[in-house]
Image 1: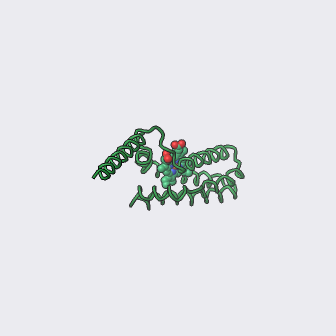
Image 2: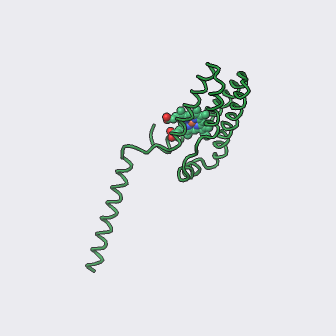
Image 3: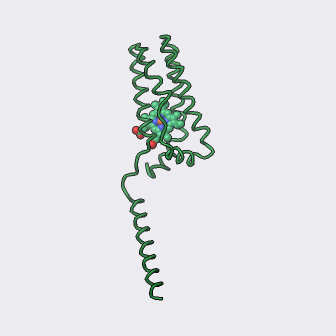
Length: 150
Ligand code: HEC
C-alpha cells in the first residue's frame, strides 16, 4: 500500500514536471527556423544576382546562377515529412510551384547561354510568378503553423 502511494506520488510529480516543461516550451521564446527558410533566402539572393546580371547583360553570370535556382537544395528528410504532413492534399499544388521554378530556371539558363536577353527576361518572369504563386497561396499558413505567431 505504501509503495503504491509512493509510486502514485512520483508519477503525479513526473506528470506535473512534464506538463510544466511543455508549458515552458510553448511559452518559450525562439522557434527554430526551418531549413527551408535558408533555402528561400538563397533563392532570393540568386534572383537578385540575376536581376543585376540582366541589367549588365552579363549572360555568363545568369547562366551560372540559373542552376543554383533550378536545383536548389531540399530540406532534410525530417523537415520534409513535417511539410508533407502539414500540406496534406495541397502538397501537389505546393510541389507544382517548385516544379515551375525548376523548369523556368532551366529555360533561363538556356536563354542566357544563347545570349537571348528577351528570352532571359521572359524566363525570369516565369520564375518570379511561380515564387509568388507559392508565397501567395501558402506562406502565411505555413508560417503560422511552423512558427506559431506572425
Ligand atoms: C513551393 C513553395 C515556394 C516556392 C516555389 C517558393 N517559395 Fe519562397 N517561401 C516559401 C515558404 C513556405 C516560405 C516561408 C518559409 C519560412 O519562413 O520558414 C518562403 C519564404 C521566402 C522568403 C523569405 C525568407 C525569410 O528570410 O524569411 C524569400 C526571400 C523567398 N521565399 C524567396 C523565394 C524565391 C526567390 C522563390 C522563387 C525562385 C521562392 N521563394 C519560391 C515557399 C515557396
